[in-house]
Length: 297
Image (tube, rainbow, N blue to C red; front, top):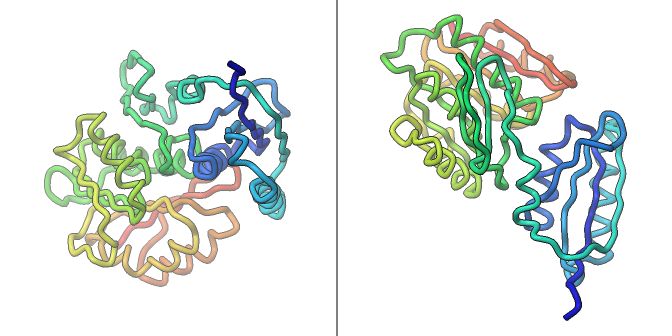
């Protein structure tokens, strides 16, 4: 019997775009992808996705080319697209080999469930299954939120009972909620995407934090509880649109961490949230991405 062939799509993107590009290609193919960081052009990563031959045609190729064109409009390089036929492999296992434990902050290590990791003194390990929801810690905005979380936690949060009450808006895989819970918080994690809710629930289970994190598909505007700390790693347009709803859920002296935007979006976001009475207390940036920290008087 002839071995089945697949269509392999290799997309070359800037390293800082690897999580977004991985999620895009996972969603487009409906399968796990492989991330290659070695033997690629400097500053780039290759994302490999797979189609059955009958699934791939002119429309799919045009869509991939349009995706890279959109990235080029933001002056993101390197970019490239290669398509070839390959022999069948066990992709369900092959893509897992490219997810290894990674230390994201001074204290936090993220590992997939199939990789073991022996925590060193002072390290906290959380398990993330990198499914179709956003957030394995590789993306700059996720990393910035985790750094900001540790920063404000070290400085001390306002008294809101024991443990602290935290809200994670647009939770994705739940990585920010998991990190806050490991620090001692009780967390409400919300997301309107059913796949994100499912992914976050699974990661909460994997980390045995069902008694500290509540994952819901509840819209932000339907919440009535107020929180000592709110985190929102979502897009700049969403942060602008939801500003009143977000600030309305903050306790007096509460802290807000927002990310998911580029440095060019900072002035508009500062004006929006400071116009609602918040004081900016911090700004973090890496690879053109930013995170803002505010406090409510």
